[in-house]
Image 1 (tube, one colour):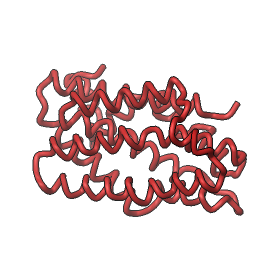
Image 2 (cartoon, one colour):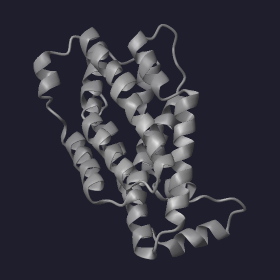
Image 3 (cartoon, helix red, strand yellow):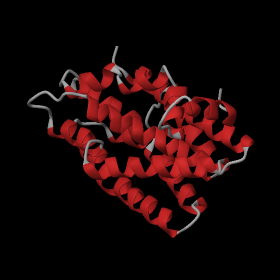
Image 4 (cartoon, helix red, strand yellow):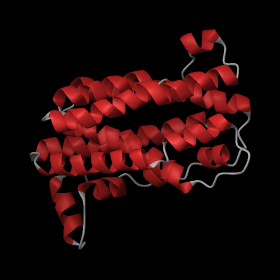
Length: 231
């Protein structure tokens, strides 16, 4: 199901087709389950308590370090300066604007210093962290792009999908805004385009590795959000 032959057969039945569209479909039902996750509706509708929102953000912040490292690996393996510039600009946003949102959230909701310094990560958080580190350490450029496409495209889709309630906490609004703005939409479109282009030139074995990387990243996203959803 993750071979170039499968992709070619899928594309032959459609007037317009992209590899990233196929990868998304290949990752069902995990893709739609994550984008439509009840956590995001609760977040946007103001139904998460302050403690639950802070707990979610503590877990999500656990991805900033391995994700920053993953982008660093992508910059190192990129084919040229054009890609490096775009990825470097995104890393700058991640380590400034997004990092600031996390830190101010921890302050506003009273997350203890001990929790910030040594979080008790859920097993699903640790598993996803390990996958990001594994892809960064051993993946080629297309595999790294596949993981980046998943993480950013899913967050864009849920942020575009949700309906915000009036009177949300400003930091909840800010968290949604980080993933629902024109610059982020442009970045996700760029990631998808570059993965489509990079994947087209892969040999059969590398193509399968890239597709499996995409699908596994989606599965880890779903597992994480299922685990962090307040019971």
